[in-house]
Image 1 (cartoon, rainbow, N blue to C red):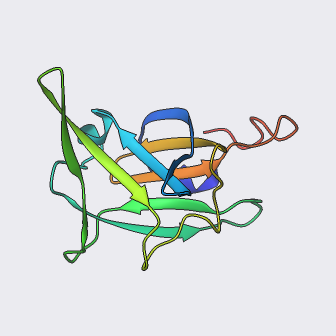
Image 2 (cartoon, one colour):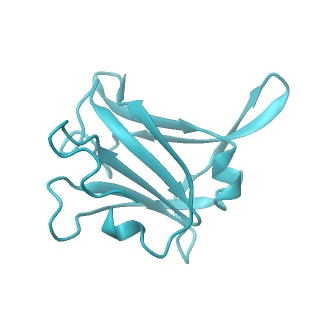
Length: 130
């Protein structure tokens, strides 16, 4: 993945797009978010991007320079706080144009950025490795 050059990859995992009120939902729970600089209450911004040569758009989550309306939440799991980024469709933001419920995605958590992409088909797997 070309766009990951220059970013230190902290964690990469495969997930499925969930659903909330019939709309796509992506929910990230991981202590790796803390290592990437996404602490509780941190403002976040979502953008879509596609680098040259890629078939699919990527959802990029970053830390804005100004305060935004979205923040990293906190949940307690067995007495331990874990950061949560819950991405749902709203009036201002939509997932349904890019991701479908039940679709496999790859989540790559880097320092200061999170990249979410559709999982490549078996024909394309590992073509653009980190």
